[in-house]
Length: 156
Image (tube, rainbow, N blue to C red; front, side, top):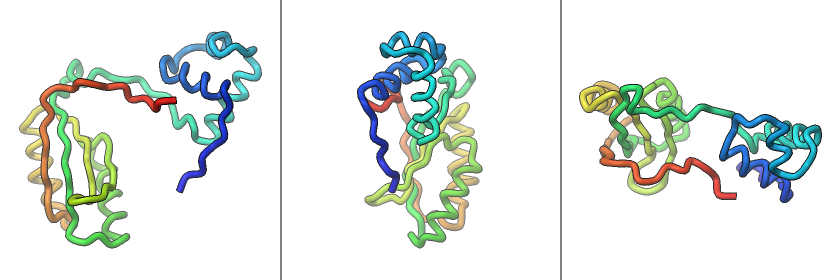
């Protein structure tokens, strides 16, 4: 289990501001949170070193890049041994269509968030790759209709 890091009010302000705009300069960030630039930079570096901040990314608009299909796959494995779970987890890392993957409890073992150019590409992945995997027992797919919320942030 991940150890929770102690954060004070300034750390939380820094995290809120960086979630809103990860490209701002340290000087702008320091002004927004009410401290000078050098201690602000030290705090940000500490948040990075303790993995509170995992990284910085550009959020891309998938449809404008030709990726129009978003789907979820609920995958059940034949066996839930540690070796099978680890092997399937490793396989998901190789599949570019799978953008996020979680192990889950309940009727399925994994939940896969998939983004593809179109339905044919997604179907090919499900049939030729996912269901063909030797560890996979069941696959249930859900095609999305429209995204209604996309915050992508931790509430702090």
